[in-house]
Length: 318
Image 1 (tube, helix red, strand yellow):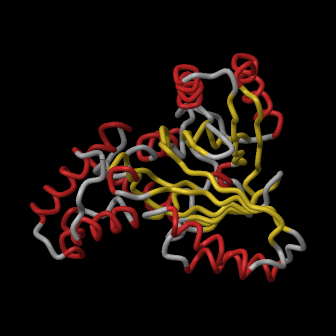
Image 2 (cartoon, helix red, strand yellow):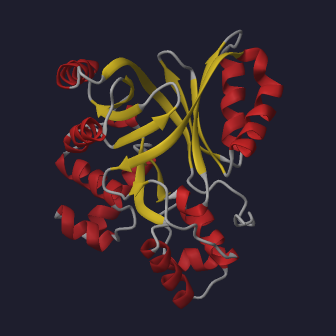
């Protein structure tokens, strides 16, 4: 059931999604409330599960990883079997995002791997155990991604080498971006000066691109959709036009260019399905010369969001 949010709540959530490491003092100034009032509202939003998690967005390609999107259509699978499959991917140390979805597919996951061979081994291990429940699967490579408010992802000029201290920081902050410096020091056993320096360096090198807030869409009355687009005659000019359309939309938090059976994926956060249909109608009208086919998915629940799911001791690429 959705909770009632006032103007201050909505502004606070927007700011936390803009930068979840804003201090309560900074948030108080930006929202126009006292620091104790901000603290109270955050705790209330967390208690009501409106806020699920604070996380760091990492540019995985700068760490030598390629993201693979996996969509699964299940068969002969009841609720228990679907939950078992979801739990499998939650526990997988290469899975970054896991969700239940509705539409053509039932379960979705984003998996980081350093090569097609590594991803093939990850997928093969899963299929060995669960192929009897998989009617169909689709695998898409993310060529380019834009999370609005963060940096764009694409092929980097060089791979960043992380040492053990960097990995410990990323392991901690990837799933709780609001940890204080003192809390991060306790978890990583690093001094304050070292911690502050390394966080700034990881941001400067664009390893960490943004600190965001994962919201519980059901609780705040929002529906989360993905629009998959298959194109024809897509050139740089028309792609840029579609990217700009997504960027200026107040409903779209992310645009992805894909390699596989679909070419483009645009995410939308909407209050109702009618708005989605209006957006699709507009896209069909504006981009008829490049639109071959499209499909829509609704994200029912996100179970995992962790941009550094690996063991902290994972080795750097050679």
